[in-house]
Image (cartoon, rainbow, N blue to C red; front, side, top):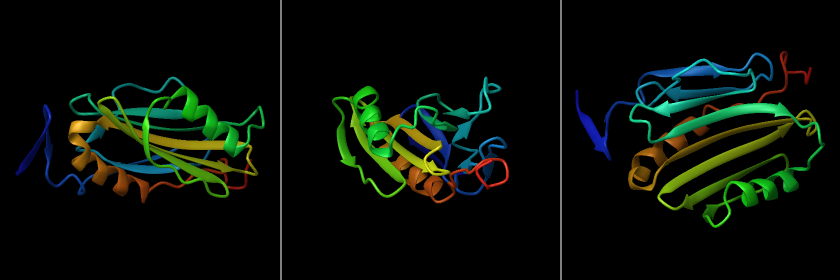
Length: 162
């Protein structure tokens, strides 16, 4: 099997072949990820989300959803993330649309991509993010693109915002 060396990680060149799908029963979101790249190391503490780690531990895939109990607006939540998580970051891509936004860029030696969607009239906040070493961005940028195509934000257990 051909291997690509990226930093200290050796990842299968055919990482696109084997995927697992996470479906959150409570909030209804779906996302798939390549199992040769990410793994879940421990059982989640909550049913609101998951954190998966790259095989070498240098990258993370975070996915979750939670109730918007404070009725925060999409723009306000985006501003909050920009201030709390990405202050000082070099933002390269940050579209804001009707019910979703993306924040993508770099901070120090890390790259990040975060997608946030408001569903159920803004009552449910769905998000996923990938954080990875800047030195491995050529590889992980392709992984981000592939994972993004699988993501479906949730709308409750039945898809009816229940």
